[in-house]
Amino acid sequence: MDKFRIEGGRRLEGTLRISGAKNAALPAMAAALLTSKPVCLRNIPRVRDIITMGKLLAHMDARVELGAMPPTDITIQAEKISDAEAPYELVRTMRASILTLGPLMGRLGYARVSLPGGCAIGARPIDLHLKALERMGAQIITTHGYVEARVPADKRLRGGHIVFEKITVTGTENVLMAATLAEGETLIENAAREPEVADLADLLIKMGAQIEGAGTSTLRIRGVSSLHGATHAVIPDRIEAGTFLVAAPITGGELVLEGCAPQHLTAVLWKLAEVGVEIRQEAADRLRVRSGGKLAAADVTTEEYPGFATDMQAQYMVLATQATGASVITETIFENRFMHASEMDRMGANISVEGRQAVVRGPTPLSGSEVIASDLRASASLVLAGLVANGSTLIDRVYHIDRGYERIEEKLSAVGALIERVRQGRS
Ligand code: UD1
Image (cartoon, rainbow, N blue to C red; front, side, top):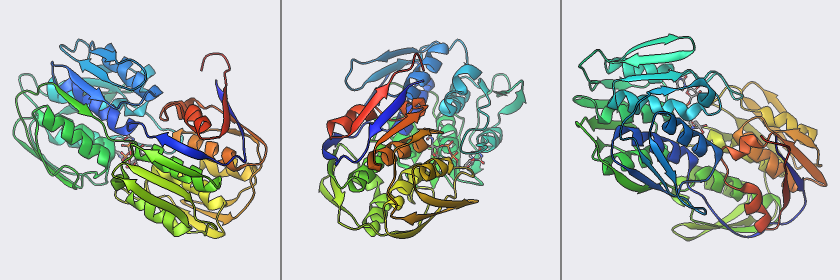
């Protein structure tokens, strides 16, 4: 398993290009299962989850062609689907494999998908995905660790009225995809409003789907009998951008982020401004960020979009360790998402966690230590902590970060960080 070694205390300065959003690319790839024609996706980040999704689609007999490096096209053609199964060995490495369930049900009326199980940040059930598909006529059983869903012979899924009890991003995406090929109209209420859901709707519309309300909490989908191919560039990764927006002020540096989507970052931009980070929008897709001097503590609560993203909570915690005063961080989306706090404490932070709240008292100098990454965003936060810390930080299990950040060590090195990958056999 690879590690990162970071020599902290270096000021970051320069320009970084933001990659395409992993969480938009994954559902877009799954959407290619809805048609026999080629779907060409652009701005796809070269991260491990994308490779895993490619393997999963190939397992189902889709043709998956990655464009040349660097970026970043991928063409997928699922002319026929010989095996509508997402096997455990792929699902266990990437929960987003569940995104194949909706399109398989829409196109074939049959799917067998391994149950993802829990993960480091909480139980993460998929009951809401399944209930919604049942309302659309699917018969679902779970057996031997797999969800087996089918519509009765000679029938298609039928449109239905879905009211999600709780907002779910991939749940909304699954039902949206399934509904494009269902019989009749589907109304989804309490839908997730994340930009990645709207981006998926954009792609589906290009493929011939009839969708109204993209980006809102009410989606109306009129089912069509077939979809066609399309070309689509996925949106920039707002979480990667948010991570670098924190990297600049904590190192006393100044960064320009190119190719980002500031309109998707409003809650983060506001919160960072409250802390005292100076951010200027220089163009529609360019932000300049630097510390505005002293950083002041500010409370934050994670929420569904357009609120402050749970995927930015761990990175924000590092900023809070460098701000003066007590910051109360409340996590409302996942029940167990503070694993990074104890690692940061080992580096000298003062963080007390109780239930879903963490209180960070700052500023505290951090000192380089050996730490372990527990999940994707936690590992990003440990990289940030390593950039601030005195001395050397060694982060174990960076395969988590490789799942979702494209060449983070190369990007950070290019703006002055001392970070290297320590290769340890095959990870
Ligand atoms: C997606 C993102 C992930 C992000 C999360 C929340 C992808 C691939 N992943 O994950 O990066 O952290 O949104 O913004 O886009 N829930 C249920 N039952 C369900 C589904 C969800 O109880 O059937 C709960 C979850 O346990 C969680 C909450 O609802 O507490 C939100 O989860 P959800 O939005 O579904 O997260 P994901 O789509 O898995």
